[in-house]
Length: 107
Image 1 (cartoon, rainbow, N blue to C red):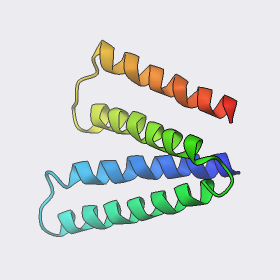
Image 2: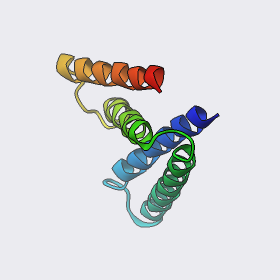
Image 3: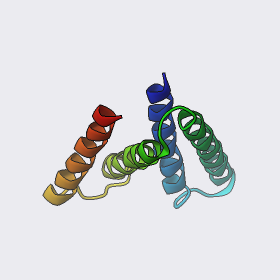
Image 4: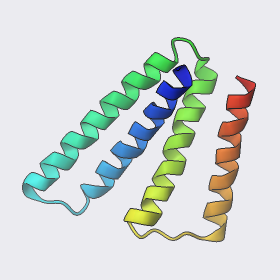
């Protein structure tokens, strides 16, 4: 269950990154809603990460949380913000995913 909580925390990190990206082009009320989404996702991400760290080692929790966020941010950037999907970006994101899996296997 703690791994599920940690994965959800990582997805919330991706959500607040997405909301932050949307604030770059939003105006008026739309901007306010993206900021509210950012703050809600950020708060939920921190809460879930703290819950996961109650039973999982923080040396595992934090790298997995940031890894999910980093991978998710790159994927969101490619699919929603038109960022390049170069060979090297995909290669290093793949190595990051394999590292996250390695931490899960070892924990």
